[in-house]
Image 1 (cartoon, rainbow, N blue to C red):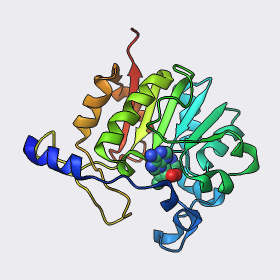
Image 2: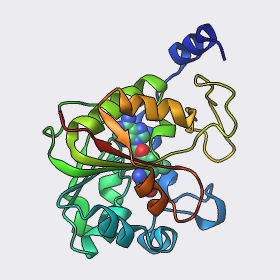
Image 3: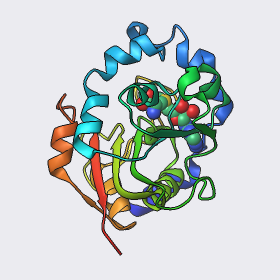
Image 4: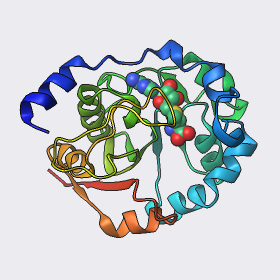
Length: 222
Ligand SMILES: C[S@@+](CC[C@H](N)C(=O)[O-])C[C@H]1O[C@@H](n2cnc3c(N)ncnc32)[C@H](O)[C@@H]1O
């Protein structure tokens, strides 16, 4: 893709509003194979992830950015991890378990005024960036780098076979709100420009399913 095409696509993107992420979004029949956001379903899907997060990062304070109804937060809370979440969908809070509901702040992932800088030693954001416009991704990356004092752990959906750095897909077959599937190197570059380096050793540990959808970054001390 040329820079001119990239520019046109980026400037033409429309953000998805918070109202789209309602109870139907999280629990509706449209999801493949009962892949919904109930705690029981997520416990099975998450499998070893919560224990691995605790073991690999040994975090003292975790933020889940774009936490949805807080299932991963609940599973981390069960393991004694101090965890908070941010999501702009009011339904996230309503659908969350009582144990973590009050730990969720309603707000946008790209809002730099929500929580203090360096407040968490691990910021997680999984299955969120593909829902944002490229311009929102840039702001969210900056916000993650602002809020973490050390690690960032991201999963998202990437362009499967980009020809160059600027190639990105604006849809897939899974979810109509998947509007930005970036070249993985472009996302790494965005983090690097915010002072965060890649940790391929930790990525290998977190990507135990071998899906190639994990990034782990570490903030370079100033
Ligand atoms: C597919 S869900 C992922 C939820 C959770 N992170 C997980 O892995 O199960 C995408 C989440 O991103 C949230 N989201 C999308 N755009 C957002 C934005 N601009 N600010 C905050 N949350 C956003 C949605 O409300 C939704 O909860």
